[in-house]
Image (cartoon, rainbow, N blue to C red):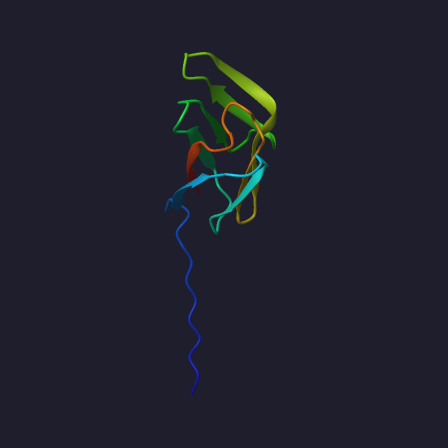
Length: 108
């Protein structure tokens, strides 16, 4: 006899994924698969100290970008774009840089 089981997470359970990468060829938009649609994403360039964040409700490719020197701005292109199973890190040349370590965290 076969059994069928299913699992659902309560709406108040936060899902989290994180990771790092170093692109060593050509900087490109980088697709991350984390298994859920994120509600918050932060991407940091560990080498330069520059980073950006995307919050649920912001448009695709937008982000709040902070430069290590303290300058903060909302960008409307080359930011973070969520998807059904992850997000894409845009080709912002302050954050997504060849041969520099990029770290990210996504909450869903």
